[in-house]
Image 1 (cartoon, rainbow, N blue to C red):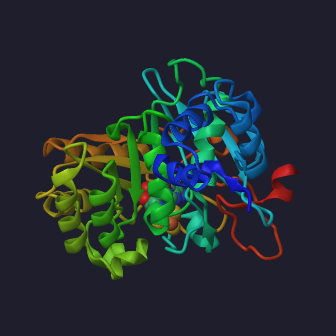
Image 2: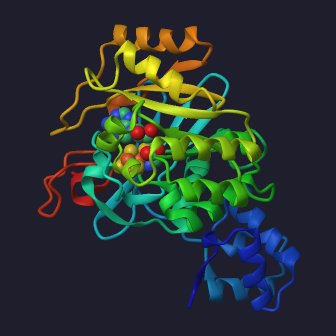
Length: 364
Ligand code: SAH
Ligand code: SF4
């Protein structure tokens, strides 16, 4: 069977080369061609012996997923819609800021965890993305941003914060993370690669042990009663366990804080009393807060908290000494904002639109 070399990190590629009777340094060379130079055609890998190039052409491919559309927002945010087969697509969003460029990457088509405010969750679970589909988003964006040759790379940070729950696709996400960190691939520091999780407690421990990177936890509620409703995985891993897992994570984390993401839902979780309850909850975890104004979608039962409410909520946290930022809504003119829809789906099989959309609609 033809191998897709985008599915391998350094270890996997070395093993595959060994099966072909090739030396580890050849694997390293090819890894650099693929990821550092963005080359997909073996014929262009000029310092590789012709015989090996021919063998690779016969046995393997470098096949990224297909880009269905590529939109640029007025604020510079760029959204790629990626074909994941069976008429479905996921999104990758590049967010340029003054001193960094962040790529927001998807790890699953759909999501099984069904958070009440999330369009992806409402969609249900389709499937895990392959390693080639996850790292392929970085590969494609790097190329599209013209940032492949030389060190002026536009992508300085990657967040696994797109569609899906990265820790529910752990093996593939970790192989992709290892490529992001590998000096022969994207060479990003562990502090600049962030996994966002809704709180799969046992898998947080695995991530800490196998590939510690910066961690963001989608908290969204200060008590189990409310979190059980908003983030149903809380019924399995309640807040006490989640906070303990955060503490354990910090033992080995590349950053000395956890980022708590907190979606601001009007009249639901956004009062001063909620903020004070949060302070009590997180007092044993060194953390920062990132408040996310809710992005509505058709049929969603929530409203975004007013800006003044978000500011007051942030004040309560900051007065207690917790660094708190409010996420700016970026790229909403091209539907690229956090949690925002990629498009309306009136597909027969899908009742609620999410960040997974039918290609037919995407092309329309
Ligand atoms: N599954 C992971 C990562 C993907 S979701 C997680 O839940 O953390 C990335 C972030 O987008 C999460 O913090 C999630 O809560 C947030 N999000 C989901 N739906 C949203 C919406 N409608 N508006 C704003 N943020 C949303
Ligand atoms: Fe899944 Fe994250 Fe959406 Fe929850 S917020 S349904 S975990 S993608």
